[in-house]
Amino acid sequence: SKNIYTLAIESSCDDTSAAVLLNDKVLSNVVARQEIHEQYGGVVPELASRAHQQNIVPVVDVALKKAGITKNDLSCIAFTQGPGLMGSLLVGGSFAKSLSMALDIPLIAVNHMKGHILAHFIDEEGYSKPTFPFLAMTISGGHTQIIQVDSFFEMKIIGETTDDAVGEAFDKSAKILGLPYPGGPLIDKYAKDGNPKAFPFTKPKVDGLNFSFSGLKTQILYFIQKQTQTNPNFIEENLADICASIQHTIINILMDKLKLAVKETGIKQIAIGGGVSANSGIRNTLKEAEKKYGWQTYIPKFEYTTDNAAMIGIVGYHSLLENKTSNTDVVSKARIEF
Ligand code: KG4
Ligand code: ZN
Image 1 (cartoon, rainbow, N blue to C red):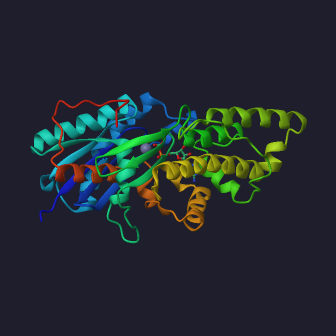
Image 2 (cartoon, helix red, strand yellow):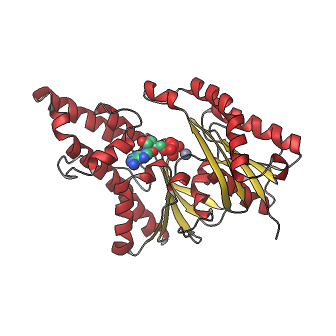
């Protein structure tokens, strides 16, 4: 069969990424992180789109060089259409359109969330691919969803957050504790030495498969305010226990919904994605669930869980195989239907 070279571009938030795939194998996956946002404690949209403008050409150049090909070898160009920050999406989208027109090769608009889900289908040694149907749980700084995936192009959201994303729950909790942004990885780190049951936070009551995290954040804020009134050193003295307790509560919220989703669908294959799937507590809990509940769980290689272009490329590749290409009048969308 034919060799398909896909160039993929991801610019939905604060990372500029370009990847080259040969069929379902990744030849290069380059990510330029934007450190500029750290000092603001969150992503500043204006600065993000400006940095994408600076980064996009060099990042694509490096991706092509690392893959050992030139732009003339490309079969198609895939890019993130949405969801994301409009100013960021437009940079990647305009670039992809122009290059596809210049090279006269197919353009493929990709839903970022589908990228997180289909990242599991990148051919990678040591990683097995889920079989259809499976449940995907996408947990990141922007999203928290449970999706029933019936095929490459038939999937439906069966649960999602009604307020904050789980990554925001981690980052906002970390902020309350005075930790730098993004605080998720730091909570994970400190939690390793703490007692997860030291401070019992309550889980929100949310119907069905939907999530809510804003109540937990408020609960943590009031708890910390109250404790530091009587003991100004409360955070420093209890950091590991506080982090372990927060992480434990968040994992319980996720696991309750996953268990319910398995019960309702009868599907026991669970694939997770998004930056929060790096969390060691979540990884351990899922491994335990394999034994405890007979689930099969899938966690992609780390570089394919956080925002990256390779995951956009694998969607592009499968789209091209099914002739699902886009016209050049396709537009970027901050919010997008699945
Ligand atoms: O997928 P991602 O890189 O970007 C988004 O699309 O949001 O996810 C970033 C999020 C941040 O909220 C970050 O704090 C969180 O993932 N995160 C973690 C860990 N590593 C990254 N949260 C908890 N534990 C971790 N180890
Ligand atoms: Zn993402």
